[in-house]
Length: 570
Image (cartoon, rainbow, N blue to C red; front, side, top):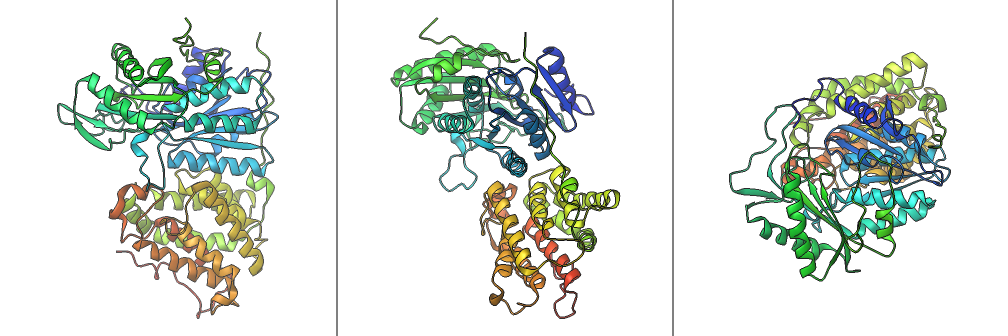
């Protein structure tokens, strides 16, 4: 339970406690927060970095050290780490062949790890990603988000940790990770929700005699509620679902019986026996069965089952020695002085790399955002968690402060503020867009249409690489893509001689059109048809940026797009 977390900095305090419990093994960087293994294996060529929301321990931090991970980035409880944490941890942990990110398939985790990867590539550091998506409960064919990443993450980290200690290169580790993920599936159930850290009450309620089937590790409700069957019948049903979802392959499997936080060792070991029997009945050989709490959901009363089909050599990777806080069972059912840490490197900040950018655009954008902040917040409350307006306004204020303090140009200051200091999912995506726009904004001089078109297209490509969104998914891409198209093809618009106005008008049309779309990406996708009729706040914020540029560089009454007057919110 979470009654005894410190009121301030609970995650940092816990990280320091882990380091105290394992002296000489773990180093804690407090700002930004990440944990790093002090003594990685000398044969490693690639640093392994993972992380995610806190509350899942011992996931990630338990496998920090030799035979496991080089660095871990813990977010707040059930919240993704910030891209700056991941970036700094990756710079610190990178080997001579680069760094590999192991990422659970949750929107915030994916976005922030991909933004960190973009920043690493910009600095010349090789980086690859293994995306873990093992949860069969969220494997619907029409889902754009795909299966969630859950307890198979621990299996991926252990196998890759052993392979990395053998000196495997980056491409080999990435391929191995993808293979392990493709052969792993998980499913989870819960009889009681986790305790909310803020209210002290269960996050959701279940009637007596029922279970939620297909729950998530962030406390998400199951895909359905069922009558609580006898545990043997429940394990049989879960094994059926896993068996049906596993791809064909060898008959040897690794099985993880994972507690979600409040399930006792007695229960987990009993479930292991039942699972073993079910696997043998299906002609599967459980070479390794691993009972314990490895991927918690705070104190949720429930458990998950994970099966991984073992390819040749994977059992040896599992049984390879580790020096990590978490001690995993190494015996199979068929068998009965540290080197110095690698030197840390630090990458230059946005301000150090580029100090130009239109200050007038920043000031105009700041004024517009201030005017519409409350409207954006109300929109986000309808489709998300209601923090978008404040996050956007806070990031813009931070950019103004940076420009005042350091002399950085307007768009460069926006890039630095949103990449390093703005949390959530969309904030860092805006940072990538600002970063590309800053490259063509010398002082307050308007860039050429060609330069602006190239920068906007590059920003759009970066946002799409990281977020995976396409036009029509009801995201900021639905405003950014039309702006890029308008800039790339002057003949398509009567404002051919006014590129900023053309881009602004196209972005506004695209943003307002999102009200007719059913979201397929991001947090709004979780509310389904309830989002129809609500324009996407992120798309509106992109449109406002191009409006600000048009106001500054083409301030004619014929083309001026006043804000927030054109933005009618119901």
